[in-house]
Image (tube, rainbow, N blue to C red; front, side):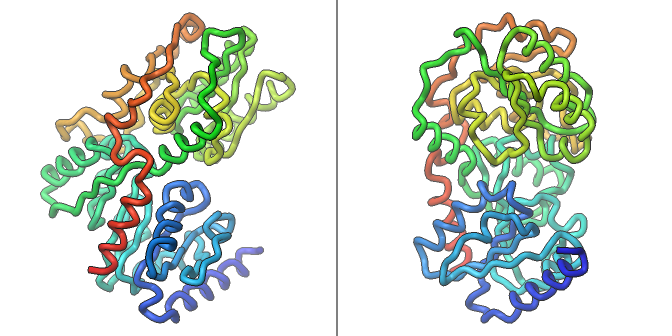
Length: 376
């Protein structure tokens, strides 16, 4: 579909949304696209299966898996991510909006001129004050917290910025639940990282100081393959978008090597379960891996991923900084050979319960809270 056709489709969908009876659009779930389905899909399906509430599922992507769900109380709409979306949000008449997009009210996407309650759902276990921009959550009414660290961080942010206290809810983390459930189905393998061929999953974060962007990723792949290790490269979607040359150089050089795999879908889980060790830097994927599967992580100590230059004004250590020593080993990018010398052990099975709420039950808990807000 060309841009003009897509534009008119998006307008048509906004009109269709607005023409629904008010009772059918009291609850709206918005997704930026397919990469966020794992955080919102379980909430949507649980709400549909446990209540009589109608749901509007609004997405910016035509490939969103949510569009494939059919239910008599579900209406789905594609609205793109440009002017049409921004206008719709500014004029949306609904009681509750659930989404996982930070920076509401700060850039293009504004709060509605109507009375709407906004709920933020976490799409990572990382801290809320270092990785996100200042004010990223100020315009939300309810924050779903994955663990106690999010509770502490939001309250500290509110105190520093002198903003009204939000409704904080002990939710959990759907992505983690999904990884653990699939791991249980597959069975916990007996293979350890000390056996003949280790399988390394290189899955760093993105940004100018990232492992792939700085060229360190290419060195890691070359080192591991030279030692007959298996390597799966799983770059962040933003790395593929903004550092495509770096990714292409690695893939083109090693695509014929039987020990090398390239995975460009971060929603899939196969490489998480098949690998022995993740090599990461500051990505929240490392926490998903360690907590969800009990597998160790090697952290490449590149510069921190900082989107809030004033994060140190919050007197709390960022979670991803604090937890590193408990789930893996930190390696200097100038000492990559140390990767091959590590004796990495499986992590405790109950690690997730120490740091994350409602492990295995986040969708049920979250759906009940959303329904409570809709029915207030």
